[in-house]
Amino acid sequence: MSGMHIVKIGGSIITDKTKPLTFKKAVVMRLAREIKESNEEIILVHGAGSFGHIFADRYKLHEGYKNDEQIEGVVKVQRDVKTLNMLILNTLIDAGINAVSISPSAIVKCRDKKIVEMETKLFKDYLGMGIMPVTFGDVVLDKKLKFCICSGDQLMLHLAKKFKPEKVIFCTDVDGIFTFDPSVDKNARLLENADTDLLKSMLKMGKSKSEKIDITGEMFGKINTIMEISKIGVGSIVLNGNKKNRLKEALTGQAVKCTRIGGIKGE
Ligand code: IPE
Image (cartoon, rainbow, N blue to C red; front, side, top):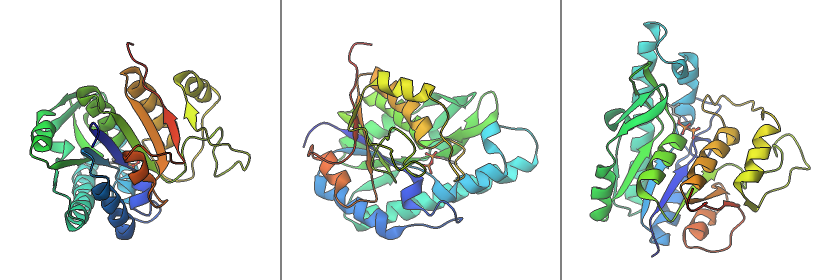
């Protein structure tokens, strides 16, 4: 067993993002078994997929408080992401993993969509007991906007800053970061290794377009998060969680099809 890892399972692989409340149990069970077999120490973060994005978008929760009608959206989305979290927790426990869930709505406060408070000691205490903490993209209180969306990617960055894990792994529905959007450009090439200069130039090249509803941004937003994580000296891996054993192989340090982004020490 090496150092600790922080793993995010994106909402696009654990739910059908186009249909509300569709849980992909078989995919989560396979990933849970891969985590179990890796025998690594992990903090798990998962996205909201169709349990969060569809209603969060309908009630415009990403804009913060604008009117009282949104309050119904706040409670419904918070309930729905908790439902997804419980489905995931059950699957993890069924796979033999000792896991507990930690709801961001109870321990995170944002200001203008940025995490300014988060009780991270809980994570450390559970890890110390050999228990895997599981947290997720959620609706949280915001000191300026009353409420906001706190994405799984934001949680990844905050937890990476706090715990300086050996690496962070993003399980997505594509093989890694491509030179162009692989769903629209067949000449798109997978970047096996990417440094922050390359990522910076990719961000400058323009905005990627996605047909799916995703108010926290797909790969584009992820690249920003990965660059921030890199600055704190922690490396990232972006891989395809729909492909068998890729997560397990990445966790155990084997060569696997993915994009690796190194951590830049001393920044
Ligand atoms: C979004 O979390 C949270 C809500 C919409 C409530 P993420 O942005 O981490 O979710 P995915 O991975 O894109 O589905």
